Image (cartoon, rainbow, N blue to C red; front, side):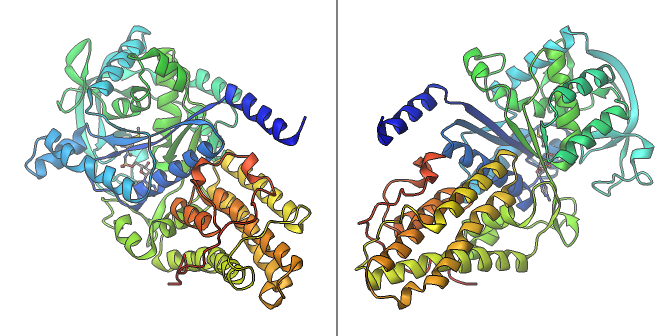
Length: 516
Ligand code: MSP
């Protein structure tokens, strides 16, 4: 079999078994305009989705807005609007922000859509029929910002630990989800799926919560009417978290479109922040187990983006609008910063100095320099025509190792490690150029070989970096004379050494990443 035939066969086998990848962001409350805390989880999920598209998987990437509940009703009232009109005014600001940040979501769900109401109704009914939802009276302290009841020992002197605001006293008749019945089932499930939560230490934390004992939680309210009615008792509306979590099912046709639902569920990754881990990793799988729905395959739990040491949030009043930053540093500069700067899972301090330093180091100096050096020398000494790489180049193994490390890191949702691995290839290639000094060499085969190797690295790097910096990756691709879209490349075959064919027109152009 020739090499080409072998490739075709591999591709044919692969296409017969195309796997699908379903990834979600949290749905954001519409009480505030999008800020960089929201942008953070959205960019992580987007980059992950882009990586899986490169792997040739059939990807669904969902984001959206959370529009019911007391918090939204109060925010609407403060503006003198109905909750629906208020939500209608804010939801588009999320859509616009994501477009500007080059977020390639496949769907955007709003919890006020009919498709969502239908799925919530189905899920509630399934849990009720299973006997896991019962009526009871609730007295307790409630944080509206969290939309959560707390006991005294979960508060600091009556103040919410997350929002630092006083909580309110509530007493109402609520339906309760009997979470306490699920302790053992959840522990058994996590035992059988030990790597479902990344990073690993978050998985241990979740086991800890569960072992510490689970309290039933209220899933309905009578005190407000901004929500989805409980199907068997319409005096009540559904508690906002039960409603919100169900968005992940509504978007894949749960209770409405069986073929869709069977294709996409269970979700591969819920990308979430650590603040909502209990809802996602304890409440949600219990609700699903109750309803006879398979729990998620994975959760990727991020830390907080801090500003001046505090979580960026409307309540803290330290909001940074991502759209203000991209005017200066560019969309890719911002995306790259949030992905590369902080190991996913840890908190990261957002600073403008950090953003600029990361841009200058990784983009202007490392990648930008490599592109401009290569294009300049090819222009001067090869008439602007790119030579082919050498099959036995010393960089070939470096590229293979970088690909393997990049892929392994994305597989466990570690964008900073993935980018570090990709950038190690860029750095090695800059060092290779410094060693061979093609700018001093005479035209000829030795020079061609060095430049061909560097062009081949740029081709591979454009692909590997495209989840983080999609536009810049495409620009690099075009600079080195390649046609088509980087995002249409398929891994792992596209990362194999030797793909750059000689004869393409290499363009010098303006610097891709001018220093800031
Ligand atoms: N609506 C709920 C989520 C429902 S999901 C079924 C909610 N919304 S939120 O708008 O308050 O925040 C959602 C998520 O945005 C957080 O969990 C977190 O992932 C992200 N972030 C918001 N502020 C953040 C930071 N300052 N840093 C990092 N991410 C944070 O909770």
